[in-house]
Length: 391
Ligand code: PLP
Image (cartoon, rainbow, N blue to C red; front, side):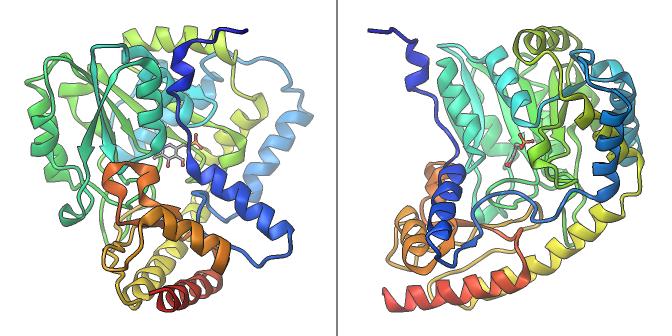
């Protein structure tokens, strides 16, 4: 009998992938399925980015790159962060990663071990908790509340920090709620963190381009007092509709940079070379496609919120970021996961139950509006009719 390590019995996953697989099975059986489950833009990667990858392949970029990424791309990331947030970032702190998730994985591996606390948002991206449990660290959920606009509460977060805390994970704009933490709350959080100099912070800013209603993204690199213990997670997946390319970046503090570089050498050697050239074109080329996509998400956001609020028993706060709506279904008789599963099986609409994002997710479901307005409207009609018929 094999003896694998116990940590693998604790690792979780992302139910959105299981829902996607099930939706695909039903669609293959000929069912008309509308997928509002998976969190990825329904747009194609802009053509000039695809062309840059093809050119890189034709030009012979077929070999390993440095483990930390091609220097020009690290420089372009630093320049982009400076342009958008007026922050000074050395390209030496930037590492090109195979997507956003690997930064999460590495950071949690660097801080998690039995006996330490890692704080993470609940509801939040499920991989945070999965990885924390994998390392044996104690997962400490930070409540993200509807009554607080699904933003982090500085006060509540700081109250949860104990001498055992090693890492705080923050995410804004947020998955699954679409919440955006406003600047005054971030200011308060960072000010409070000055009392906890041993706590590192990982800021997941993968949705940083997607804010609405004049809301401005606050990049945590703008706070000098935490710069030497801040990991920034970002990437191309959502902004440039490049989820399948597996291209992301991290900004690491000095000590962690070398750990991450060694992990990269041990794990993946380097990121796909042609994808890195595509990423360079994305940052240096026109940003019109990003603006168009965000404007389209904004239009659909209004459609989805409007439609949800017309369904009896459902109420949906207006999300300020990302491309998710997180309606409250507590006034229907349904448990969230049962509703998500029946809606897929019986009405052909894929959504995700809130509990897949944490304990506080009960009573909510997540709809991704990365789908056409026509499909969103059809899905909302089906959801309304389904709830009406199964009261
Ligand atoms: N962080 C958050 C909050 C996400 O929602 C996602 C993807 O859904 C990721 C990170 C992972 O991004 P990537 O596909 O680049 O690994």
